[in-house]
Image (cartoon, rainbow, N blue to C red; front, top):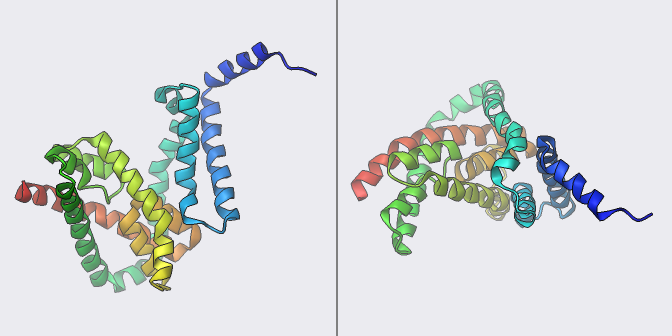
Length: 242
């Protein structure tokens, strides 16, 4: 039985106006991406977050959907980011004794890693001849997006550009982090999680937590502490260098 094209169009127009449709699209895109990721034996370049972004962005571009309309449905997921981040305190508390016993090592690596990330961002900016505003937007890229955007605004960067760079950094870190650690033969799950959390913040922490609780705990510690340290050193470094 043939379906009337005008009827299909009416259904599509109706779905576009329903917030639930965009929430379903977002969740469905992630489930499909994660299924593909699992079927390819966790191939690094098929990271579920990256693939979900490509799927959803492609749909918005193809059907000329404004981001505001999409966000009206997907904002529920955005709201859950807050409680999900706070919930990381539970496994951190459960492993507090281990974290405290390694506190000196953790703080040392956090400071060195944060300073290195800021300086390498500054160096790459100079190497490619970027202006000071773009460099300011680039320097906080290694911390979670809300903190990075706040730092960027404080030092005269462009918060929206910082958000994009930060998300890309997180996706690359989450995609290639495990692969790199395997090459380096890092077997300790605490060390693996800490490295991924430090390099790829929230996206890496979520991926680490889904693979191993110990790795997820130390990734969360690295993400939180690097945000604090970076927010302190970036304005100082920016003032000294510029």
